[in-house]
Image 1: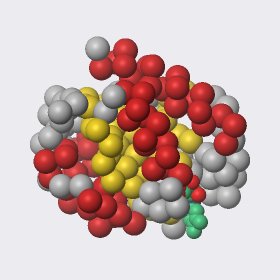
Image 2 (image 1 turned 90 degrees about the vertical axis):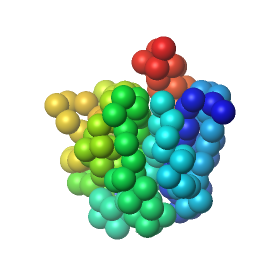
Image 3 (image 1 turned 60 degrees about the horizontal axis):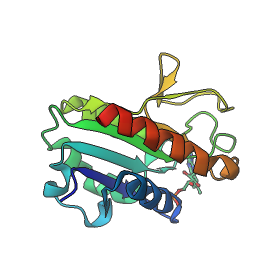
Length: 164
Ligand SMILES: Cc1cc2nc3c(=O)[nH]c(=O)nc-3n(C[C@H](O)[C@H](O)[C@H](O)COP(=O)(O)O)c2cc1C
């Protein structure tokens, strides 16, 4: 079994497509949170992805399965986060769902990898932004679809270095 597991939640398929691309680049397992079990969280490296819904809420399947993350033992688990939002339509809650996953994982001892620069985004607030950086890869196919592929490529290269 691959040591890297990507677990994603996606309502209209955007985060799912990115999850598959990321998993392909990292030669990782790719699991829909809707069908995930506690064992899926037992990997040395976890990549967790979600879109943001409501106003700054987690994607529905993640919301239903959040107890799996909250009860996982993640000490020494290198963990990265990604997801989609809409920086103009939801400028004050841009990709907040990613931060919700990140906060839950850090509370369980996860070791954060995959932070990114906020350069190139026009949101006004995001819970995923801390000390001038994002806690993961924030993607926006509503406004910047042309940037998604390269952002994923650069991020997965960064992750491979941080995992090594
Ligand atoms: C009703 C609704 C609420 C949304 N709320 C937010 C939000 O609070 N923050 C954000 O960044 N994006 C928000 N979005 C944008 C979605 O996250 C975005 O469309 C995303 O690409 C959906 O990905 P998925 O198909 O993987 O679920 C919202 C979209 C809709 C339709």
